[in-house]
Image 1 (cartoon, one colour):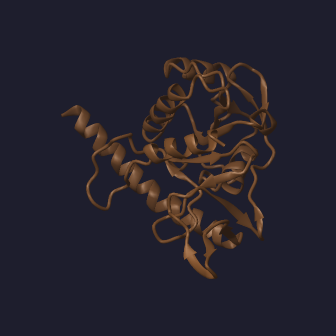
Image 2 (image 1 turned 90 degrees about the vertical axis):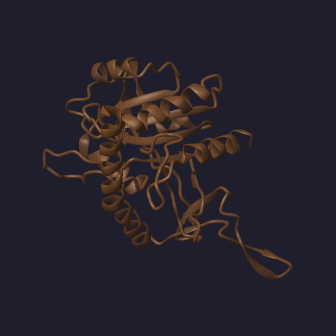
Length: 247
């Protein structure tokens, strides 16, 4: 009974975050004039809708969206930048170690993926803490140990609070507290971003052909959900990682 209650609580949090953050993400995407490369293509002189399973680019003003520059300190005290991920396919999340709800299924999902691709040096994960004052390198190192993280390309990073929040909201469209927010409450979406070997953010179209630059990371893999609830997306995320690694 305790396990069921815990799952119901996590599911409720996921629903609330979906209501709060996904509209914000779409609003920001709309204001930045984001379109999807490959959304439509020509066949025999006629336009044909792209396959929803196709991996596409996000475009802003006609240019493919690249990861903005970043540099933060990881759990080992090393400075890690976006350049360290060039040539790798990697996932991005924003989290904090004191989180007791959606971060738990998020990082269990990431650990599953990290173990699956542990032998592939061309895969990595970038986890950014939105609570840097608490999440020092030592705290992040212990957190990684607690999750049994052994993938050497998984960096848990900390740094300037406002810079991290700006990277989340404006760099990856993964909602969190805005820069300058002095409220004590910490919040973030349960979403992951997928980045290819050349630093471009990649994803799929939603069933309606709309931009969807994220994957739901807070729904436990293989979770049984009722119609209309947030469905797991870790399986399709793994498929898309494999597609990029094969290129």
